[in-house]
Length: 46
Image (cartoon, rainbow, N blue to C red; front, side, top):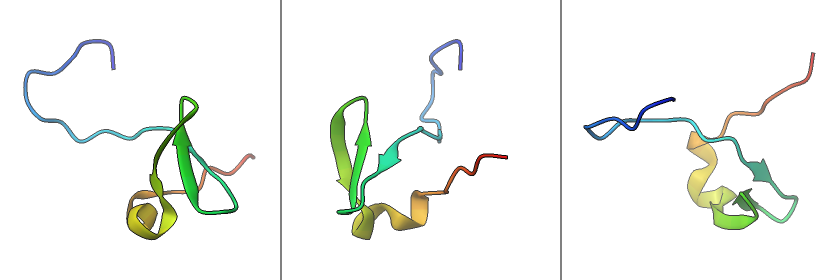
């Protein structure tokens, strides 16, 4: 995304999921697996 939208916009955000269920982005906890699992999609390396 190059420009900030003027309306509320649904976006994807790359994050890491720790073994303890903690979801982290940019070094900060943004949530927990049990509450965010329906929004998480695993990225696989090819």
